[in-house]
Length: 409
Image (cartoon, rainbow, N blue to C red; front, side, top):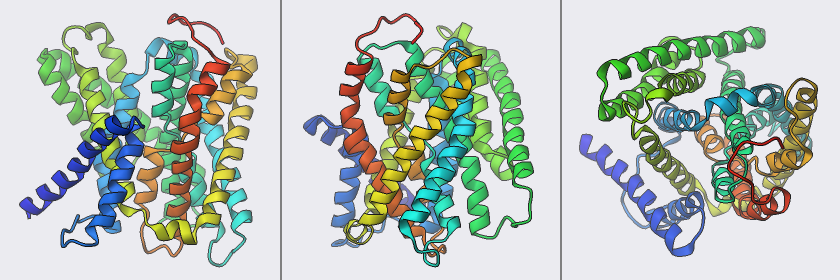
């Protein structure tokens, strides 16, 4: 049993390594390279007896308990506390009101576009909307840093993505509960959302303080890396599995509190932690896109091409409205985000790792799971091939080279 699992882990990791080589050879984004490797591997496995062990029934636990904690913690650790404080209000508005607007507008447009209430009911459209509300601008952030633009804009991208991922995952949990009848229709969704979210935030703050105290007490840079990696998995597991609150929010707050508390000892006790999270983020992102490639089939594009186009259009329109409304509300009471930056936020709001993680966790017992998976894969591919490749030109045109110091937009 252990040897089988080890073989499967090595096989998926090998695809990630192959993705690194393909990225270097073709000079494309790593996520796209890993996706191509996974797709080719999936085609090749049809002619072998090798079993990857990847099933819809076990993907949920793999994604939620292994992959998501690392991705969320890594993203939260990258945030700069000073800049986050400055842009916190518009970030929170985009991550709450913006996510709700994006979810329901996307769902409404998809529901109308599909036009098949029996085969694709409203709950299916709502599920797709919740998944597509999560953004993952990893490639855009790399492009912003390469162009040496203001740290403020990068922080807005990172912060909005992190917080909206957490909100979207909690919202996804509610909708999937309704779809699978594990959450009753008569339940108070607001009360459930509030208790799950608030519980995750409070537990994350407590966990972050405890973790920081342990790191300072141990006082070893190498041990600190282990403790923080352990805290990512432990905070999620305890919150989600034992306390039944939001594991994603717990991980996020554990990382933010730890980062804020340990920032003064980053060159001593916390030395090298950023590098640890960087390689873990690359590793798990690569695995996630390789898994996406494995489950992609040519039949998706043949049978679901119209649904994919509908989802792409709905996601773009919803993102435009969500960003615009959130920034408009925040403008009188916070540092305003210019229209140029809003345009970058709209086009740079790529769908990636979190959307893939959520859609891969859909139970195959839902009759419309394959349609949703096809739509999400279509949007992710559009993000990678169109938005991701055109963003550098948009950044150069709209923002241009900027000094490394923080400035108002």
